Image 1 (cartoon, helix red, strand yellow):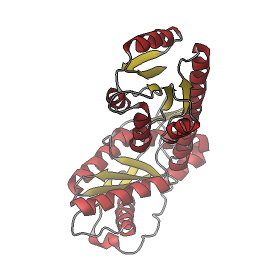
Image 2: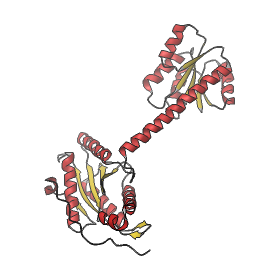
Image 3: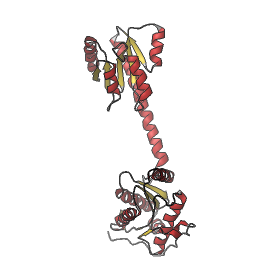
Image 4: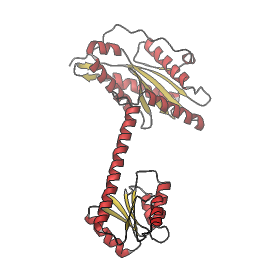
Length: 325
């Protein structure tokens, strides 16, 4: 583990650095508080820091206070080296943000045990952060497709619409639906349907920019949000997605199966409606027309699509086509 050692006394610094290196630490040194602060606010910050209390300019207590007030990244465990022994001094140092202290002259074994305590604290925080990230992922992602779930993708759309209003930008919106998906489930089984959903999700994700959003909107429907994307470019993106799905069959244990999607396209531009439900309704209306026109196609929303929600399209009785193995 990397550790910062800040001490203005050259002899003490070299002795302590050698001791820390012998214990397996990767030691970064600073000759005063200012240099220590520059290291702690930089990239690849050491997670442990030993700071001499008395240093010219910015002392160890000042560094602790500044770290706690200004840094929001991973927690830094800070230990003060001090010859002060009065209770009031120790209280002031801990109140400034220090986690522990060692009195000079220090006992090497005592210092080592206190550093081990710091390592345990850092390890615990890492585990808590990892658990927090996993819980956040579970709360915002669909566990089958790996895409954002309905709540998260709608929140992304709200954020992008708000940003577009402030900055005069455009937002592209695509609503996609797998054609005849119920027939895939009925004829091949739900496991095959799950595999189709995962593969379609992967193909959609491959045809968006790194800062675009793709989410599972419902059952076999996907919502795509394209920030700073005019309507014509949004239509082009939808057409690429449509081709990416139907040009190659999805390979299942039961054999290759041809899958297609229908897509409805709309968007927000300055001066047009920015009401989220109206935009979703327009994309859904365009999607309905794509279904009614024969499926496996892209339709752009028209003014009529901003009206009432359209009825669901009737399902064709045509069986899905299975390619030969």
